[in-house]
Image 1 (cartoon, rainbow, N blue to C red):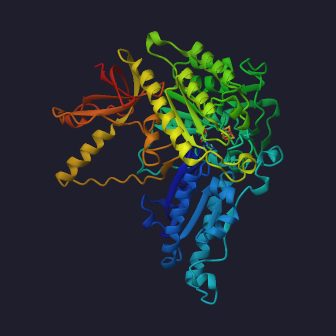
Image 2 (cartoon, protein in one colour):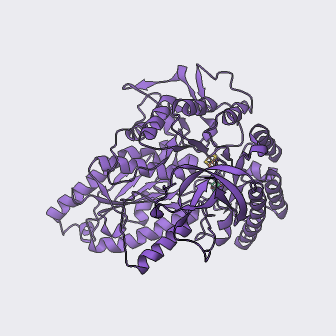
Image 3 (cartoon, rainbow, N blue to C red):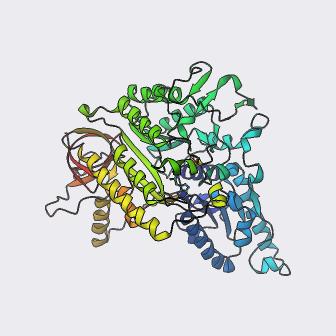
Length: 580
Ligand code: 5AD
Ligand code: SF4
């Protein structure tokens, strides 16, 4: 078992982060241990993303480095999990023979077996090397462990007939023991749907993650309760089109005593109420209300990512009437041009999108008590045939919708998609870059205006922990005084975000909420007896405030709620004073 030290690195979206967590939990329960350093590991796993080329390149370069290492360490086991594995399949292994294990996102439940096989093969090879085998001499084995959905990737078509073993992976979370050395987290993701049926023409997700399926509501609620019992107070529900969630009880199928996830049959009645809501059907609105009411220990309930169409008034009412559901919607618009939206197969027009934004504000905006609603978006610029006029239309949508932030991506042609096959990537890269910069500048202006509306109000914020400024100061102090404190908590997964980070693209940084943590420069009179905390409002605004330091005997405010009066805005973040 000593050879079962795993390094797991995660690329891409929150869904991948959750997959990694579940996979790590399973492997942990089987006796595997984790390391934060790839160099120490016997097993290196990459949970990959293929939504844009940039995310893929990182994996290719990591694999290139491992190929060198494997020449001197033939027993090293390398696994590629996730969307890149599914999309490229065995071609990936041909290009990178260093890869021993390949598992698509729809087959992750099979990883423990495949990994075990791969390790056993290594062990028996090293016990009985076969030098006449050229693969063995190169440090390779011809045996590969592969689980992909392949051509049948729209897996859920057979769901009614066969047990959905992937559901067991989600369910396994409740039985996998936590590493006692790990700090239990206060925030968690819970999957409610998997896959996607939208087939936007630029997007690989419907091919890599397969058809949309909806998990049984009781499984979701039990998972939320189990997490709450472990101390989690903030849950983010995940789905590619999360608001399409809908479970029809009359059609439920049980296999081996377990209710099976259901092929997605979303309600397409626009913003009307679902007439079958209630006893027969658990709609997305029903699910939110049930989690809110049945798991009151969850102080903050969020969900991402929403699809702009089919977002019912019932959902908005539930958010309005349930105080622990966050007033934050991430609803990618992708473009502000009807012509481009059509080419993207998005299924709505700009005026329909704006009607949706107006409806959201109508239901949820309460400026008088500083409970506005935070709406954020994604945009793809430089989609094939995008003209200056199309681009101006996108800029105008940003102005009109007043997003609190937007994630802006340059179009990246993805093999396997309709756009890749049918539309030439004809917007030159310098034009894409120029539009990217302009749109970010505009979004920053809008974000700054949105942030300024909070000044003078008091917000109830959830404290995430000491700010990065504070952490770096503490580190600097520790280094000066040679008090190194290596407290490795066996971090299971490192994430390379699919969202732009400063390293990805400096210009993207300030529009990106997660990267916008840009605390104030140190003030000379800053007392070591105070600490700067970083917190978040339920509208997803980042808030910094100072408070007495736990090192000076004050209570640690991390993972508690605080009332903060907002004094000013800097770099799109809010700064305030805590009410005692
Ligand atoms: N090129 C650029 N951006 C893309 N996205 C998805 N596919 C592509 C692509 N081929 C963006 C969309 C989506 C986000 C997660 O990634 O904006 O909302
Ligand atoms: Fe991709 Fe469109 Fe599905 Fe989102 S809705 S995952 S962009 S296909």
